Image 1 (spheres, rainbow, N blue to C red):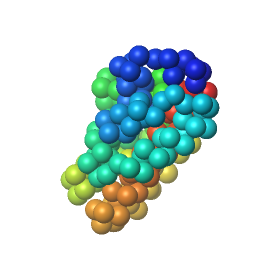
Image 2 (cartoon, rainbow, N blue to C red; image 1 turned 120 degrees about the vertical axis):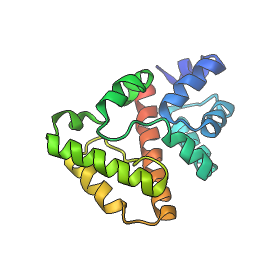
Image 3 (cartoon, rainbow, N blue to C red; image 1 turned 120 degrees about the horizontal axis):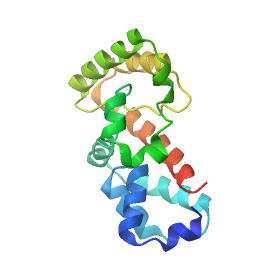
Length: 167
């Protein structure tokens, strides 16, 4: 889709497209209010500005729109609508060993139990083992530190998806 095509979308369709990039309704609404976008760079700059206006509740809402790392069944079923933009993000998990997948599942459960939200990582370009290592490192953070890291990872994911939406 081009910037011109994006700018012409009906607000409801645009909301759906932006929600595929970031599940925060505050962020999505802010992006809709900022259109039209002159260029792709202007779109990405607006995404940064709107994200910088979000808060902890917005971040937590965005996190709900992600499957757990390594949960391929969840990725296929619940997140089918984002598959075009997000489908390859966890591609390395497909080739992970059963031991790594089990460790990811166990780590995800411990992480979610500790922090109250799922482990968020920009998975693009990372192996399942690398993501497991990050999870095992980050689980030792305090909640506020981890929330900020997860929000930064969400922001990276949003940028990648916007760049796929408007190549």
